[in-house]
Amino acid sequence: MGLVSQMPPRWFDWDQAINQHGLRLPHVSQRGCIYFVTSRLADSIPTERLRAWKAGRDAWLQSNPRPHTIQQEQALRLMYSSRIERYLDAGHGAALLRQEIVQGIVKDVLGHDDGHEYSLGDFVVMPNHIHALVQTGLGIKHLGNQWQRVSAHKINKALGREGAVWQEEPFDHVVRNEELLRKCQRYIHNNPARLAPGMYLLGKGLAQWA
Image (cartoon, rainbow, N blue to C red; front, side, top):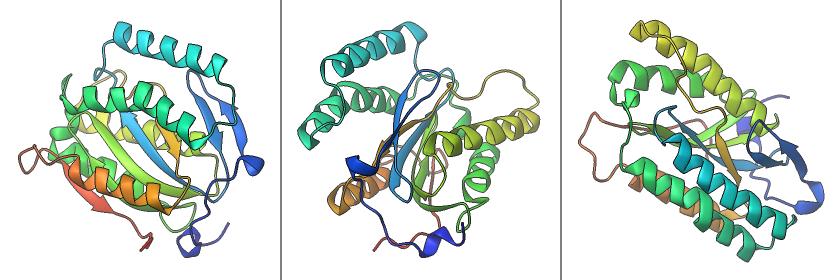
């Protein structure tokens, strides 16, 4: 679809949204928007804990059908995604992403089609998860799953291991406006504040959302 990096941000509009359902997560997508994407390592959250959080989220969504107001979106984020992010920041699991070779693989995969199929903004590779801002003309579910599939293969090969690397689906949150974009950028840059150098990787793609 041409050089996505040259596209100005397109803010979310419910009238143009596409509802998608992945294996476990509901996805709301709109072509050309910016998304805040989180991918978690397979061992980063115990299955039973994650199942309980998802059950609470699903019950809330059943009582609060889309489209959501900004206030409803904030309530859902506090109840579900913010809870997950706090747990991830505690650094549970084997934390494969602390390894320099793995950080390099993830960086290369995120940037592979930057400026063509999508436009990558700020990102951070934490010990057991990643956050990234990305603008895409593709379905965000497709892009997130592609990142995970390709990077998992490369990570397993580099480390001589087998098995799942990532949890089944990344979590994505559409960026509604410039204020939220700046908030996400600050979150990414502040996320590793308590970590020692080398345990994380901060980066930025081609996108210039100044």
